Image 1 (cartoon, rainbow, N blue to C red):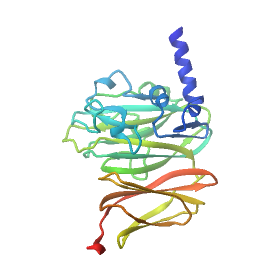
Image 2 (cartoon, rainbow, N blue to C red; image 1 turned 135 degrees about the vertical axis):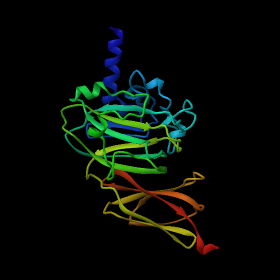
Image 3 (spheres, rainbow, N blue to C red; image 1 turned 90 degrees about the vertical axis):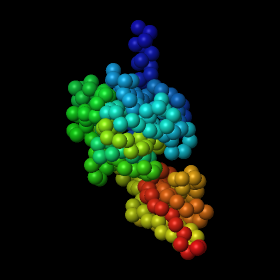
Length: 303
């Protein structure tokens, strides 16, 4: 009886209390925001390596700094007990998920991610209604590269296909999901890899956002061009203001500019190399999802 009461408490807390516990995690009936820094959110609301075979997989989901895009915690796959985001070429289809309930409507789902992977490897993301009890019962990891049969049914496409791989630097991905407001839904991440040579890194995920679609539209048409010894970053949008973040992927050096009121920003001070540029909209006090591009930075004019 005591274990049942504790389980009911944790379930209640995940949905209704966690937003009071940390400024890093916000859960409401109209959205979800988490950078995974909250201990309670990680330990009590997410299920990693789901199913009886999850712990037997050669590559498993972990929390930690190796999978973080800033701060201390990201969600990532590792074959060395979480020491690094690397994987073995041993077939797995390993599952992590979180249950949540949202008001009826259309939502934008976005998160930071990176992943290597050969043609038979990749990240799948699914949004599964709780009313499909047969599928929910089968949310389990498997120790082969055979894809679970529910992935094609519920996989999100992100504008291309449901298999995501080959993004070896941090970037932002986005798609739309829908809730009927009457049931729980399961946000599911599946890392699937085959037995060909591993092409590192394994997948990492951070800064997860679910918000009402159209409430604060993401910037579009991001462009970055060298200008003398700097970079001119431009984009399209009609928000009140924008936040801009630039990261050198090799050194980790980061520049941030808050409340930019134009749709362009001249940037100086980044060293040459592969850089990722992020822009997000701010509308009537609401902060939207990031848009991003990665581009190799080279200063021919200063040579």
